[in-house]
Length: 308
Ligand code: NAP
Image 1 (cartoon, rainbow, N blue to C red):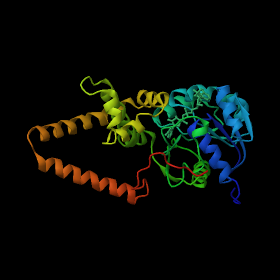
Image 2: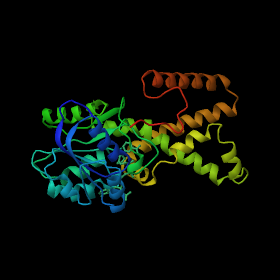
Image 3: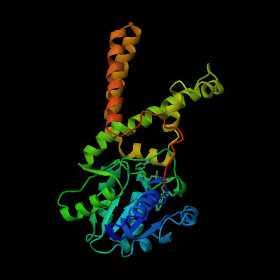
Image 4: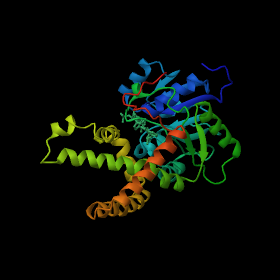
């Protein structure tokens, strides 16, 4: 537990899954909030979170959890943000900061904003950190350490409110970046959403093959396929909602992807080794830059151990 002064007196997190439970764990570990309330609409999930002693109070009622909270974070799938906001809104106090952790920002800004009381301050957010796991047991306090947290404040937000929310995420170990919701969705479409779609697609294709057996696919998976299966094991609800809510940006990036794939197909067909070699050299350089930037380790990270 940190000796620093808490950023907020009361934090309420709605959604006790991987991200919500990690926010709660990190807030407690780094002393970011004096009091923490955790809510989840699912009684079983809430009981599991309670068994882990993650928060100070637990409730299936979002309105009850957010009473007196200075900071409220919605940590539910993007498609459930509106219902979570509707359930929590009657309990919100004037002046509270409301944020979220959804992987898509424009749709959250448009759907959640109008559902909140006028007297609260709404700043959507996205910690760019996660794993392919779900549920309260999957969370850990160091999830946000050294990771980016993107905040997408609407125009006219009070700078002090933005400062408090930024300080909260910094205390959890993140580096905060600020951009518009639309820009966030475009950037994340190429760095996260399209890569997940490719992983879902290649694993699906391998599973449907008739000339290579499923047992051979599993047996020889080390040849690159295994990395895709980790990504393709990500939560189906979360990712369905990401694609339904970031449609335009994903389709735009997929268009570019398909053009580049066609060029590669042509290079293979015509034996253009130079084109292949040039691309593979450039992509290797990008991997090196990601490691240098501290966004991944050179070591294989299957079964990543996580310190609490
Ligand atoms: P998760 O582990 O599945 O947790 C979501 C939790 O929210 C579940 O316990 C779910 O209960 C609960 N829930 C659903 N609807 C609710 C509602 N209306 N009110 C209260 N609780 C509700 O998912 P997660 O990975 O933590 O993802 C949460 C959010 O973080 C998503 O918006 C996602 O886009 C974002 N995010 C995820 C990652 C990642 O790597 N996973 C990274 C960054 C951001 P049920 O299971 O019973 O539905």
